[in-house]
Length: 314
Image (tube, rainbow, N blue to C red; front, side, top):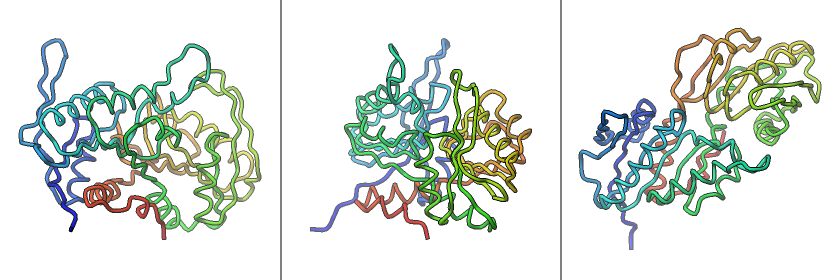
């Protein structure tokens, strides 16, 4: 008996409208009609202006700041469930709270697990996301997780640069696995910047493990928040004789003085995706779109196809 495919409807949260529109265009559909009503005290209520009964609903919203984005996604999911959607997939290009993935000191919450519980409790049947801060966060969910890999977007761009002495670098020990994964695509060496923190977003010291002399360095990270680590790592790398330093970061959180830090740094460019919309433009920041990858993943989920084949890089 042939597989039956339910009608697909894509809806955008208010924090990810630009990316959602690109995903819909790449998929070949129009975004569904969502209305966000606000009360005088700031409370809001999202609602669907069209039927979702019996359809496969894909709700697109990054849970970046402000936390209204998360609450809006939860309310949309609950609304879709109560409106009898057949299958609800939350598409979360950037999964916020992912840095709180363990108890690294006494009496703290595991925020990533809490958010996973909330998304599941709201009625989601599946979550689709990209480059989680820690891959094991997939285990926090009791529903299927499609964990997309942005390397299929970054690797072709890095190859197009034709860097003569390419070396991949990690800005900290925790990102060494991610750096090695990238290095395999280029058969390149890996160097690591070993940093010590006084507290969150404040670096005490940093040193380099490996030789960067005469090399064109590409730093690999998943999140760029204040850009302090990247700027300091790039400066240290150049001081140790590198030819150039670029940085690749999937999620451009870019809080505080991050834009100023990037522009004043020795970085040739910072390459990011559009999982989070930029607050301002910068000549040093290049944005690569994830829309086509998400559109293909949505099609494969609806048609019961493979997601892992989307991770293949020529």
